[in-house]
Length: 366
Image (tube, rainbow, N blue to C red):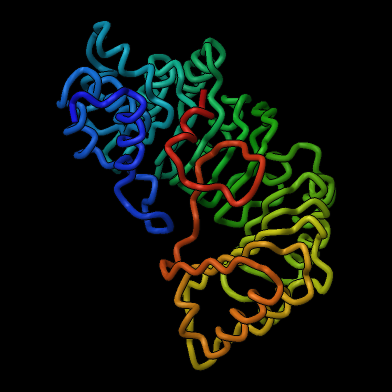
């Protein structure tokens, strides 16, 4: 085993990299125990295993002390060059927000190839002006720009979201997993050219328009209208009349992901001709009442559809067999996963949808 060529070693490490199966919670978590064991085999195994170990890091107290608070030697500096994604720990009420900001600044400064930053920053407080200036300074001096920002937790009355978005104009992937209660502050501008925007909460319309900058109108639908023709993948949790209108406006849509089967407000009768992947996450299924007839109808009348993904206990629904038969008849691949988890893909640009989980995505983070 120790005599295997490096190419074969890399293939083996790619297979053991992920701890959990696709479509399960925390599916991108690396299998650190397996990777550490592989790093101890010999030098042929050690180099690629260590590189994968440091592709995705978390700001544990030990990691921060070892790599951010102490003086750096060449070996530790070399390890940090492998880091592509970094995530802070969930917010601790006793932790000073400016200390978090300084740690983030050090991370950005030392992890020169960092591609994605995930942040937990609970509480109503915001970064001080000195910390914002420091973050802006290290952002501008980076050899490789930060491309993805995930704000996983933030206080409703905090300006951390706006401070971070305005500080990193190079981001193309933005995920906001919290409510934003304050309107945009004058003097903080959003100049990011976003490729992907993920929102798990409804934002104030002023803040939503601030993110998009060129938006017009007073409703989310009107704010999205100038951008709809560029949308290739759309994810909607609540589906209502506005959602149906937005789908119809996305004339180049390739992928549509919904939470639950639309009932009160059905999908548009005419879907975009480019739509080839429909995915539905079935979080709650009452087998005696839930029906798939509307999904079956989409399979029958939307000829461009090539892949239908159902996440959740779909096989227990009464008319599942009718859906299976329709998929066979119309050459639509039916992919059923009983996990029922909202997907979280890597923040990388793609040519086709759906995006698949793969260690090779790290190669796109350079």
